[in-house]
Image 1 (cartoon, rainbow, N blue to C red):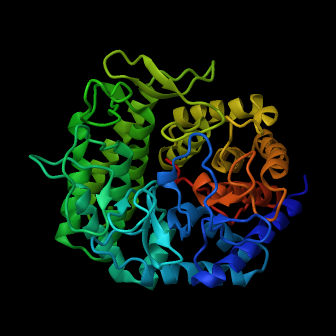
Image 2: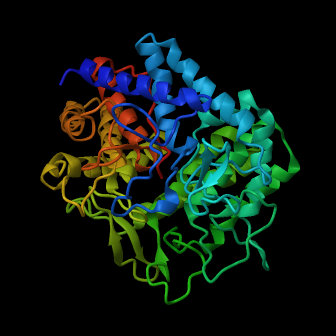
Length: 473
């Protein structure tokens, strides 16, 4: 397939999304008609494995959109479209200056909360009537996005950093939870489970590290230290971390279960944070580096089998026996696909040059070369493939090619791009999943656009202005 065809398809989609943002101060609506770009006022039925409590109906969600915004910045350069940078800045300036003044300082973005475009307020998919909005990070915020928000409203960076304190729960000793209140300055009570997933602390550490680079406040430093220390003594002999630190026995999926991918995510976030604070806090940076490398080794100590292409997302604490394997296609809530882990392996390789991570990424990439996109299943009611699955697989192929220069990965990316264009992109905007007929940011449409753009741009020039996206972890 001609890469120019892919780029033209992407640019047509971006043009329509920009047009759709005009009634909403430049913010991108989450659910759109694929031909007209109009925001859908009636919420479509959720697909299998999706939760209504995660969707941003009648709203915008910056965490969903960040891969799309990064793509627009790159295409503004390659396609001579300065209006794309203008649209990105319009979006981020409005968000930073108008959507971040919350009671807690936490932003309306992520897994449950968003900015309600009709009522111009914090929205929450779990509490759609308003109030009691819930913050959950969902994914890592990339450095470029923090830098942009800081440019438009430096005060919101420090307010958000302060707001991360509300992820600590009331009780003896420190215990955090992935949820926090946005509309009130109250710490949540501790429930029967901790819900302190390791990856979330990595998100907070990176956020706080960036805030500290802007204003060296003692409160921010203490929070960085608290979140950095939190999991260290909870690790097992392999360096693996539980999916949560406190689970009742009846919670079978969580009780005495290690989470290699969560452990890995925290390790990568720590190493990325080192680069931010090393000149300011060299001792803490050394601690982060040490912890991050141990967590990566823990991830690699999980019972992955590269020969049989079995990649492990959960394993038993004591025996290391497999509890849950990653699938190749068809991610659902709570169970992702191996492509995202393969992409993160390449992020880890770039940070450490650890060849075991490259071997794992190659093995996962090989799975997708061997196990082609399940075209014969995409129109069945029970099996919908979110756009993020296709997008992250394209990301994996593109990054393997970018690093190794091996043509097999680019060829795999081009072949997959041709397939997914037929399935997801028959209209101007891509569908949010296979077998549906609307655009939806929560399903990862931005990752699909980003992945397609990376493959196309690398086909044209090995010097690709669009960087890899490592936020899905």
